[in-house]
Length: 147
Image (tube, rainbow, N blue to C red; front, side, top):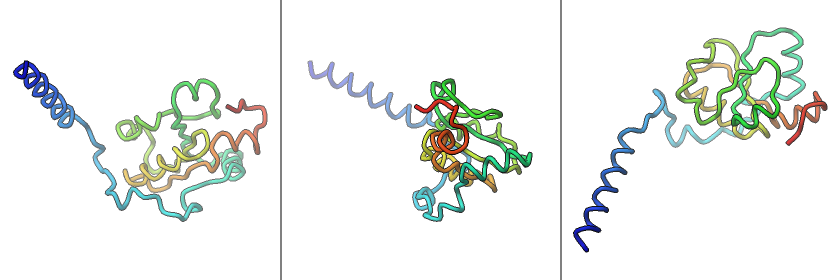
């Protein structure tokens, strides 16, 4: 009986350590100190009216949606590039380098994390839409579905 338990435990340990070895990290991962988002929110955020002005003036930028697929299918802003937050470290090379990036999510929390992550990965000008698509739907386009 004990030999069987020992064999099962050994097999599970081996599987666990193999999964640790197989994990992929982004080329540049922030340290623990860097991963704490600074409190200067103006540096990292953009208000819905400012984003609307950018759209109206045809300023070149990438509008990045980091929500999950079901959220994106429900509602999204026109001209959006969609990369779920969990896939961002491995798919960030799809984003045009050197162009300003505006990231949004539902309420603005994931997009703040995504903006900071993109900055750590080498993107120079990244901002998060304050309040996300929810605030956008209240202040700019009231026809957008709120969820």
